[in-house]
Length: 613
Image (cartoon, rainbow, N blue to C red):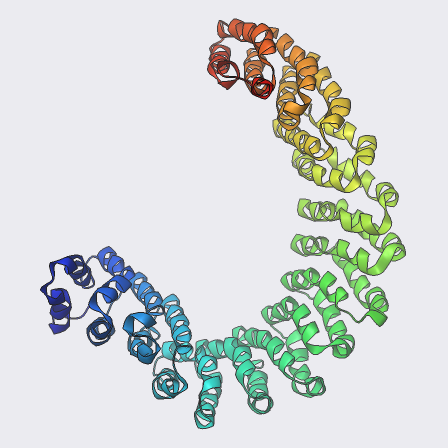
């Protein structure tokens, strides 16, 4: 850190001898404290200090102090870089905003990347508050100093500042800025070339079209051929911006040779970036180049030797097909894209298969009913049977796309048997995954179809030998009742659930209680008769169960049912049973019975009472 004391500190800390400014003096002292936390605390309250000092003293004392003081903790520097970006009004407004440049310039050269990035962000922000004259007099010289700095850190920071000052300076200064950017694009340090490549598209957007053609294209070509793949892949990102700026007739000669080269780059990371940006590139270059150049390139990416690239391309299949020109979309998909998609369905890498499964269903709306039935359904079926759970679930969660195109009957004949098979899979995690998607499936297929084909399955899960399945099945039941309504529950679910109360397996009897809890929760007061006449008698009868776990769950259920019962049922039926359970020999049964007695359901008026008054 800088030397202790100094006139600047004593002047500021004095704060004109005014006692009311004592806390400010403390904050100022803390700016120099050896304790990092105190320094950080003071930096975060820099605006308070500036307000107390006033705009003139902030400019003449606080900012020079901050510029000269060397903080070595990144956390403190980061906070300082952020604070200074919001300091314009505290130094006297736009007229004096250039006073903030020295400390931010210093911060833009430090070693820690996050600090430099924050300093550049603040510089970009305050550049907008400079007048055109101040930009040329104060801001642009700062950019030039950074761009020609000895350390790569300052040169990387400069890359982020060219585009914010270029539009508002004179043509002479613009020429200098372009020259500096050109120099940094061929810097000896890869980190600087990376920074320049990452800002190439942004810089191109503020340049005049002639300079885009004369300057940017040559830089783009050079960066896309850089020896470092980390530079080349950033040039691909810039390609999208550059292509959108150029007239259609210039794309073939100025952009496409470089893009073709990137799509076949020896580094998979560069090819990955091409795949990742493919939809944006497609929109930027237009239908003709897409048909002639991008379709073959996309085929190659879908067949790439690197799984990461295939997965990125697979993710773009639906979007790419959607954006194809309508007049020959179907022909291109069927001839060029679908054969590649068929291969990916049985890819050796599960990430590739999962990426494809998340978008493939969307092809059905593009290709129509006949093509879906003939060409896509077999692929969906294969994916439904895939050993990777994510692949199966991606298909199930998008079934509604296909349902809209081919109709429920065709869907049930082709895909449903595979879903049923998974629902009965020997691996409980597979069964669990299907349960979790059942409400979604039920909503897509409708109540009649569900009752006919899937209801039995849902009931079977309630008596599964794995607790996680029974628990999920109960939760599933609640979602189904919410979807299909209380009347459906009364006619379809309640009789089957109540039938389980006599099951010889106590775990299944407990599941009855769990199901009753969720059904009551969903049906509530409007359907209290279902609770009072059908479910309550069963719960009360189960209070005599030989297994203590069942009995204490009866107490818990009665507490949950209580609010929808009328006071007569509570007093004459529920209370005697709870009192009996409260004197049970089992400690847990006693505890939960007493909880229920002292709980809401017996100690206060019920919903029914409130509604009747």
